[in-house]
Amino acid sequence: MKAAVFLFLPMVAFAGDPAKGKEIVLGRGDGNCLLCHAIPGAERTAGNLGPSLAGVGARLRAEELRLRLIDASRFNPNTVMPPYGRVEGLRGVAPQYRGRPLLTDQEIEDAVAFLLTLK
Amino acid sequence: MRKYLVLAALLACTAEAQNRSGLEFASEEIRRLQASDAENPGMLWVDQGAKLFAQKCASCHISMKGVATRYPAVENGRIVTLEAKVRHKEAFAYESDELLALTAYIANQSRGMPIKVNPPAEKLDIGRKAYYSRRGQMNLACAHCHEQNWGKHLGAETLSQGQPNGYPAYRLEWQKMGSLERRIRACMFGLHAELPPYGSDTMLELELFLVWRANGLPIETPAVRR
Image (cartoon, rainbow over all chains, first blue to last red; front, side, top):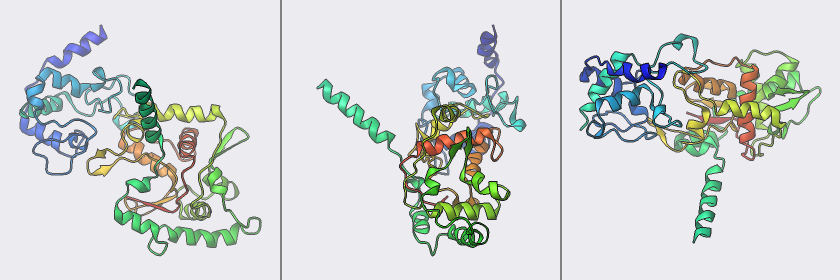
């Protein structure tokens, strides 16, 4: 039951703002996707732990991107991608971050909206 | 054909399992700084440590050559780091210049000698478990970066194997000398994870496993890192 709620809750989408999403994806905040992914439009050195996000908006649909951002371990249990929208099951979290995910639901929607522009 | 494939796979595994010092992942500039005692800023702590050692330790100890290769050790069921051993005599604060100086001076006497720790399996296994356990808001284990992805890039930085053989080390980010425990805490901070207190069991167990994992690597103290 819990799993089902987890699955469908994110589908209740807030409209994402691609401009804000760009800042989350390319900026140095808690998104900071550039640390691991090459991303078109980046103005600093990208990492290469994850695949390039060039064309990701053509490869994946909004709901697929959203689920990967929320919890990439659903697709690969050994992933090195942090769960941006999950707090359940995390261990040893520093007190100041406990009980809240790296990104809010709205921030995830914004990031998804930007990623969808990468066709 | 199949035999060769198996052999190739085995060779690939061996090559991958090879320990590489953080020095191999460092920039030309950092390597140059570390290589020259006249330029290596960590030598300031080593020199200070020599003076302190003469004042506080030399009435009993002469040479400490090789000692650092055997720490952390397990004594009477407890994990004892070089820091703990020094503090046993006089409880210098963790990360104090005195403690860093003394440990740097002692470790420096083993420079070039391979790490050789041989802890009991049950102690080692606790640290090993911690090494492979996900933690923090980022939900990553040490192994995700330092075993599975070393050599790849995290932004502009190259991920190293996280080998401890240069500590205490001078880090440019700190603008001073720091212990292995401080370096471990820096990783935990990045993961938004709880920071194990200095000298805590959690810290010591992880430290023991990290040093055991580095067996055979030469001590580089004082290493210079970014």
